[in-house]
Picture 1 (cartoon, helix red, strand yellow):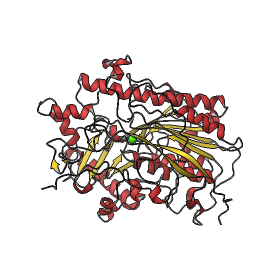
Picture 2: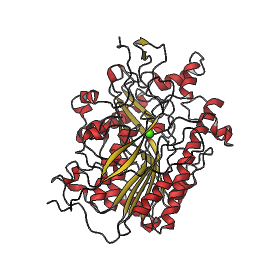
Picture 3: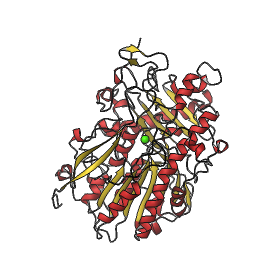
Picture 4: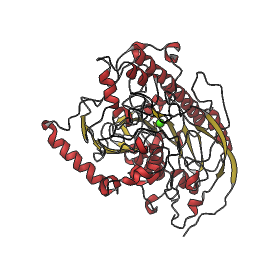
Length: 543
Ligand SMILES: [Ca+2]
């Protein structure tokens, strides 16, 4: 029986929605910001479903939950990971006083599907429209902020919650990340940094909370998503020599400088994280807070974001939880975001086992509570990820379906439509006419880096880098991650790796079948039908 006391209270809030998917050279997307009011219901209707049981197990002192999630940051780009060009003291603090997870993988390489999988605790292929970018978010898939609220938590978020996409069309009355705290603004230090005063909005949230309730808060920084103020890294005193350029990008001063610009935005995200941690500490809440710091997908550069390669879906992750999680450890277990969702609910005493759409991950509380470093739980040796449509990048709004399995040593990828262009069709239609060779590739965020590769595509030294990013790919890819973290040498057809390929292909296929992925069950044509609630581009019909 439903035992919640039902009282729906509506408050007016502001949702800050960024349309930042690309800024160059697409003519149909602007990086405009718009503010609009939404109605926030404290107890959403979906929780009234009789299918939702009383999931709240009483515990003595339940922890607060604080999630900091940046937008487009690869695993390598924190100072805790040893990256010289960036300083992330707040991330490093969480990693040092808590646990630095070196093998955390996002469920996808794009914003909305990663955030939806995290919020529901289900793989992207198990949540219909929410599993693809900029679509809707079916309300039957219950999100953990709603479960926490129903269990007595005071809940809220600032910055970027779930998005981009249309949650209202799914009957939701607020962002799936929770009620919005967005009122405080500041003057950003550089162009293209959000004016959201994230730490100020957290202060408002803290001031509003009832003192007798635990709380959940989501800080969704809009950084380091593009655009960047060109040259800001150098102007801030950063050094080209400190940049380590991943091997899938050309090592030029232009690319180094752009990576420094990206690092400046990571530091802005980290600065607000530090301000929020200080507030938690001053309030005497830090040690009773499960702090999770991560990102949603990798760096917005060619062959990184939107690709299921290391720099696309291998994420920074640090977790701190006072005395519960012994600190100072580096852990190598493979962790997926669906495991984090399960962890949050278990930590809060919410029994999610009776949900209509149960969780797909396994709580990592055993890893948090351990005192071990390295591989803590011998069974955590696989992470799965998926990709469908990212931007409007192909004829007829087609997707680029991929599934991936990461093990400690290898990354195995299955490309279901190798006939399609992985970064999008090369030529876009403008006013109904082809806009010229290399005018497309819209699954790569418009950027100086992409423009550089295109401009120099006849230079034999640069051409291979454009091909890495945009050329068609075979149906199977296999990378030896320890030797090739840039994922450039595909071993899938190498006879020396035939045994590995066969084993991983069977493991991936088996897991996808077991978890009901339509791509392996019936071809997955349903994915092509999900609407996109962001601008749609046109492309010539393929030959
Ligand atoms: Ca993102």
